Amino acid sequence: MTTYKGAIAGALISFSAALMISGSLDLAIGVALIYSFYSLLLEAIHLVCHCDIRHKTSVMKKLVGLHRYHHQYDMSTSFGVTSSMGDRFFGTYVKGGYEGYKKMGSQ
Image (cartoon, rainbow, N blue to C red):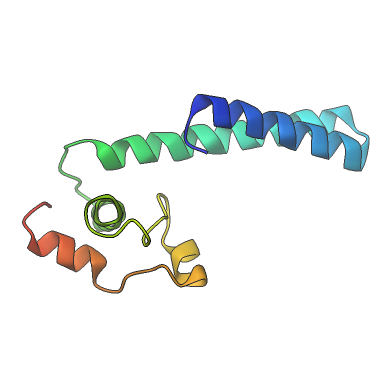
């Protein structure tokens, strides 16, 4: 969920589910806060992937390259914003996607 509406909806759903399962208001609030923090972090990293800045670490260069590959060359691959683990697990990881993007002179 990459919009503030999605983050709010996710927090409400996680709050409701935790409250129904555990019956604890404190736990439900904690789960909703953790979900909200994660959503904000994910959105911040996603925003950085779309910014036209030079990244200094190899991890950020690779993440940004894979994400830009997803948008510019193949929308059916490289869905991960903060990690490529999900893509590797679901078979949507493109081996050499970052290197191919890098060769195009974009990084």
